[in-house]
Length: 163
Image (tube, rainbow, N blue to C red; front, top):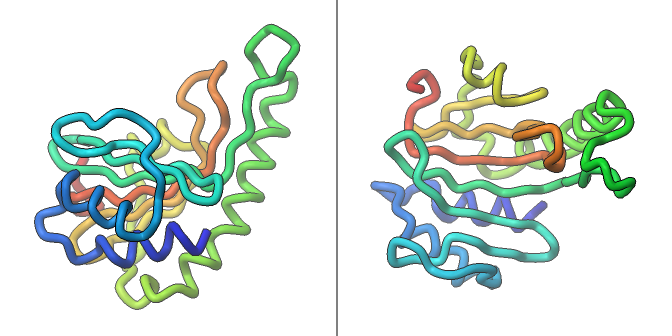
């Protein structure tokens, strides 16, 4: 998880936050490219089993990491047998990761932010902050019932009340 905090710390002051700029920081910190470049920069990265992505999001850029993941079961249905238990595991992983953010060098710039209706729809559980005019969110997420439950950390190039 330290790799996530270090990357976030290094891109914190990139203005404007761009895919090219963030990708350069991933490469400089030893993350391995995992895909094909898109829009002139590498969008997928891996370091120590943690996935990182850079992609457009709501008119800005989002830097996202998967710090914990549980795949759908292997019984052929593509669904979790006990989704609530998996969500609870995700919430425990989120609780374990939060102290790393809150005790890191990022903590001095974090300003607690309220979630929006979109956040409540998108995430199972989350914490959200403003950070230097951007939004930092740590959340439990599942994009669809047959996709993995993940704990993500995302930095978005927009203030926490917008979008």
